[in-house]
Amino acid sequence: MIKLAFTLLAILMPMMAASGTVRLKDLVEFDGVRGNDLVGYGLVVGLNGTGDGIRNAPFTEEIMSNILERLGVNITGEQFRPKNVAAVLVTAELPAFARAGGRIDVTVSAIGDAKSLLGGTLIMTPLNAADGQIYAVGQGAIIAGGASATGAGASVTQGVPTAGVIPNGARVEREIAFDFAALSSLRMALRNPDFTTAGRIESAINNAFGRRVAMMLDAGTVQLDIRATGMPSAAHAVREIENIGVAPQMRARVVVDQRSGTIVMGEDVRISRVAVSQGNLTLRVEERPLVVQPNPFASGETVVIPRSTAEIEQEPGTGLAVVSGETSLSEVIGGLNALGVTPRDMIDILKSIKAAGALHAEFVVR
Image (tube, rainbow, N blue to C red; front, side, top):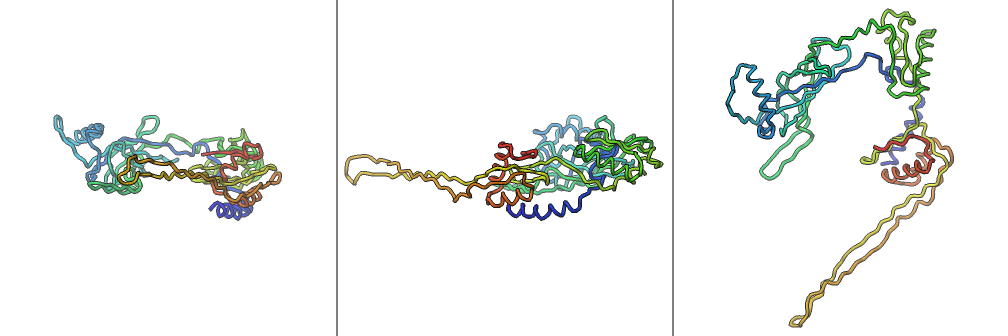
């Protein structure tokens, strides 16, 4: 598998290098063009006996009582133990420039001991932002992404039935107070800060307008002077520059995931001259005790005689491979494939090369 992955990467690298440039809109975030997180606490009804146990989730009974009283139902002093309701947290993102009356998606997650939200309906739930104000109201039928079944002696669950989504499940009630058109200057924040990339963005924008309208402030920020562009508003200026092609320059980085055995290398990874030896050592110890019993009608007692077998096996070694000095990514791929190692062995090899000071890249382990 690792050989196939590296071979595919080796094929894609020339294609990626040929394309070269990336659109500016894919490299930066424009000042003010951002979403805002919303959260709310609500109630899901209509469940088929898979809701919260009221004894284990008293907050469910409390919110249900409040909702019924607001609807004119007096339940003071009454005891009820329904199994078709569940308390949930509702989350959503209010996108940039969202207007009142628009609709956004919401995510619903159970916070009690509900077994499933399949078939449930979210009751009207206000969604608040960090400032405590209500910006949207969610309601609707839940689409859960899992299934569960329970019997007398066994149960099975597929996916996560205690969480789901409601497409267009919330209506925007309040807009974010931000006048984008009134900006006289606009800052662009690089998603991956780098001085070279920021300088290239500055040069590309200035070349597009034929004069100096952009200035690099630091590795992560480029400022655009809206008035100098001659555009009537910031929106027009962004329209002109967001599709400009820029060749990004990133730090060399190797990212490995030990749980899945995934290895990702950047194009600029370099390895100095180093020798690598890889082999597998297997130690096997086997116990086969022998039971010895006395002959019939003879005096004596049963004795257990221990018998152990221990052996060490070593797979045919790949020898000592030498990676020549300052190799590129394609040469690194060829050298590691020549060793025929597994993904997890390759992670250990990369760690050792980094510890030896021969891997010239940022090494990230997840």
